[in-house]
Image (cartoon, rainbow, N blue to C red; front, side, top):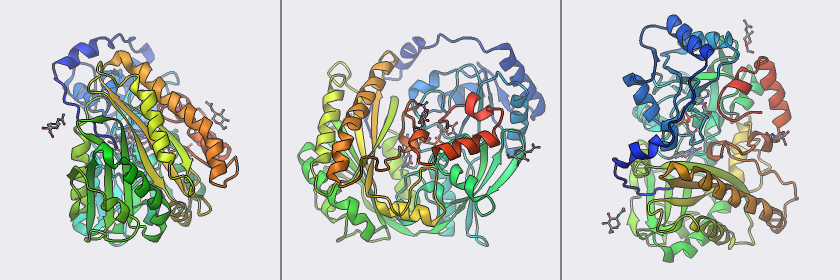
Length: 509
Ligand SMILES: Cc1cc2nc3c(=O)[nH]c(=O)nc-3n(C[C@H](O)[C@H](O)[C@H](O)COP(=O)(O)OP(=O)(O)OC[C@H]3O[C@@H](n4cnc5c(N)ncnc54)[C@H](O)[C@@H]3O)c2cc1C
Ligand SMILES: *[C@@H]1O[C@H](CO)[C@@H](O)[C@H](O)[C@H]1NC(C)=O
Ligand SMILES: *[C@@H]1O[C@H](CO)[C@@H](O)[C@H](O)[C@H]1NC(C)=O
Ligand SMILES: *[C@@H]1O[C@H](CO)[C@@H](O)[C@H](O)[C@H]1NC(C)=O
């Protein structure tokens, strides 16, 4: 994930925000719904504009752009019963919009943020416990991965989760979840075996993967469409010391890094304990042209295997070392927390092409071309990046072995890469420009795809599903899933009134 080292004078924020504060007043029925929810819940669980709890919660978003949205009220339930009470009230007000927030890291406006509607913030439901008898971790949706991984570490176990400790939990688990542990165990969502969920009709259901395998597969990567999850039951995996951390490189190392990435993707199957995130900056910033996050499970720095070509390249800055898994995620997150900006995500899935080691440089150059129109001296702290995230075939085998996920990963998958196109900028007046740049880039990728599929020896309709956690709100992520029609039907059967499909934020079937 990109790190932009944006050190902006805090004094600028109020000025920039004022431009965006032209807001419509909430509807009468929204105001009424807030009042009824407050009546149902213990005192202090519903906050309104100008109250401290409201201000704090609206400032708790990763992207500054989302901090400008103004919900009519913010509900912060403490358990599933309180969530259910709020959902039942919302059920009686069919014209009221609402949304659910866990970590608030999804940068798409209106996903975990809302203007004029009801925000249900899970912030009181945080952390994880380990049940040694079942080997399961019970994980709450709010907080960040630092909380979850830190809570589990004393038991010598972990769960498949985020790669930067600062990232939110609930959204990552519901929208799939790429992890350093994915080549061993599949996506983060694949290890989930139970979802304590407040369903659209306001009942609390413990969705059990064994008893309801179809719904379980849908829950792994569909986002927020089946209800509000108040606790995840996740199969835990043993963990001890790991080797890893970020390394920062200058421009002169890029070709060697691309070559290392090219050999890593197919090589990952030989050593599933290895993982990388390759962040390629669109413009060199203060000497930094690329950041690679490394991971290898086990205490030893690898000296052979798929990471070897990377590790032979001398970095400018080296933060990789042997440490606990919690320490690694914390350090990765600390680096990420330097970024303070408005952000956009957009994603694209490409095939791995054994015969085309020039692919990454081509993509990088195109993104630089497109983005450099904006990344000029006028916008000195803005940055765009591409994350090259390996999605080797071995991940699909792990997913399938665990029952499968909505993204439809299987053992028959080819090696692929998930691209994350990210921009960070400061001025809200530039939002539309930056979204358009990312769209131009995915349009170009879409145009190149047929040739790349042919080069890879794959059919023209080879399965290249989009990865929800990295997507832009206008990307048809669910439409890219091979099970789209079936999940759409399942969603409609569970949510016949369209409460989540028509009234809540996030991706839809
Ligand atoms: C710095 C950074 C690093 C990242 N690293 C990774 C990574 O390593 N791997 C990866 O896969 N992704 C990564 N991401 C993407 C990340 O997974 C998504 O941004 C994800 O949405 C974050 O989860 P959250 O809890 O903060 O989501 P939120 O922003 O709170 O919510 C996202 C969506 O899920 C819905 N939702 C949230 N909680 C619930 C709930 N309890 N019940 C029902 N619906 C809910 C919301 O309504 C919204 O639509 C990263 C993002 C950032 C900013
Ligand atoms: C840029 O690099 C210089 C020298 O390495 C360092 O002192 C400075 O803090 C860096 N600035 C930023 C914004 O990272
Ligand atoms: C998304 O894709 C699906 C499947 O191709 C399609 O049926 C649906 O209409 C698309 N949705 C939107 C909003 O474009
Ligand atoms: C509520 O919805 C769930 C999930 O679809 C269903 O199992 C349950 O029977 C419903 N309860 C009521 C009271 O309708």
